Length: 113
Image (tube, rainbow, N blue to C red; front, side, top):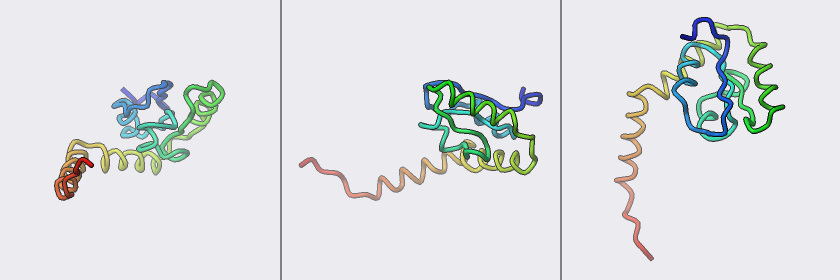
């Protein structure tokens, strides 16, 4: 699906993590996405993609131009793929969820004042 693409763009006001963005990163493509919400947790601005204010046309245009000027670089692609594998596979996300549950269950119970 991505073999001909040079980048992927998420020009939305929504800030959720999208599977298409993670798939594009795993394929080694730069992502242009919102500079708030979920994307800053996985897009390294200027390295694996570009974070922009998607509510501002000039900002979005700049992000698109920056993405269009990126050469497909094997080192950058490997970094993006590694980031997805480290943070967003089912095993990685389940492991973090287990760690969170373990931390929460070790805390003293909150009491109403």
